[in-house]
Amino acid sequence: MLIEGLYTIESFVKEEQTVKATVKLNAGHEVFKGHFPGNPVMPGVCMIQIIKELTEQATEKSLFLSVASNIKFMAIINPEKNDVIQLTLTISEEDATVKVKNTTSFDDTLALKLSATFAILN
Image (cartoon, rainbow, N blue to C red; front, side, top):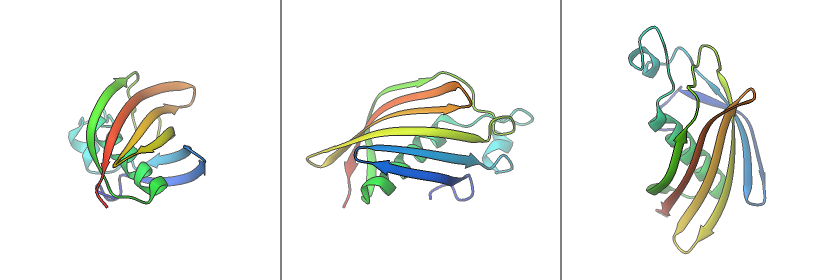
């Protein structure tokens, strides 16, 4: 985990090419003290890192983000109000790459949609 202590995985279910994960955010983590003081917001780059780490767990491969062709932040994730998020990843491998389509939500709110390609490092 690159950002130690930012989140914990509460559930991780992989069925064929789909992963459904529930992640609990640590609202007291240092990253939220700077982003933003008094009004914490989950940084987009941290969300992309979580998606990468879940994809690595699913594929058992080390990955490097090479293309993010579609990223839409649709709702603010405030870890003090919504500390549990659900991620659905559809993963496919082609040659030396892994393609991922992700949706991230909390409660009934869609917060993030992402399509990305990761290069396989090992």
